[in-house]
Image 1: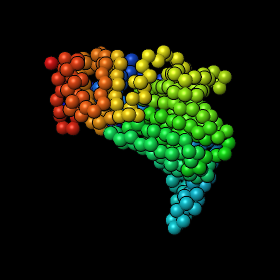
Image 2: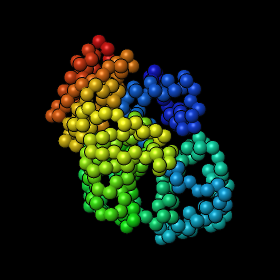
Image 3: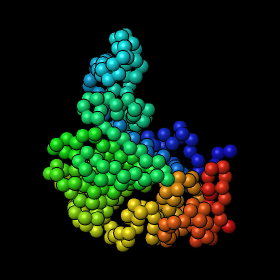
Length: 344
């Protein structure tokens, strides 16, 4: 029996396509919100789709380029990269071009989203080859954290359930990376602008330390030192906002909010392996616990209205989930590999 708040893989993709095009009905929007709130794993899966869509949208070829030329160009570059692979004959390429020609015609963005998701691997490789830049993708699993040194000696600390994409060698005139998830950047000042791209915004600095979080359909930027310029993806550069040390911005693709930072220690606690929550809604708390402990956690919809204040540092997962349940007068049970909070 399907759970009340479940979505099949096919339904999730259809909802995602409609969401990108603004075509969700009120009932579908409510069902999607309930599905996202019911499990941190659902939220993560949705955000990965959004990140993949954002990365895939750029390299899709222009609609006025002949399809056969696109496929022959792609096949030739794949041959050069793999060396030992024989080049497909033109008749083979044309057959494949006819089969997939719809992906290269001018089509609505909602239809293109499905193609982008299905062809993401080929498109990213195609884009990488054409730009002649060798990229590295670091995907940090739930329950893990990573610290890396970028080619310019900038340091990046990457939180669990996050993905960072960066070139093996920076362009002398620009340093650009892409982030899905959360990371703390300590950027070296070397004269070239440093840019971080997320699904919602672009951040640019010269030398500074700042935290970026991209979960829950928004990019949150907190500046520890220096200055960071934030620009929403769908706005003009003249509308970008400059943040100073101690300031924060919440940004979707079209708007930037500047909330007061009441608890800066809460923002950066993950770097020390701690989880600090100050009046946070339960759904967000469960997402962070799931990433931190690499556990699947769900909650009954009636509990999601609760706000949580807690500080977890040395606690085990069983201690954390027990304390969380007690704080909202709930109980928890384990079903297969999923922990679920239920009303008493």
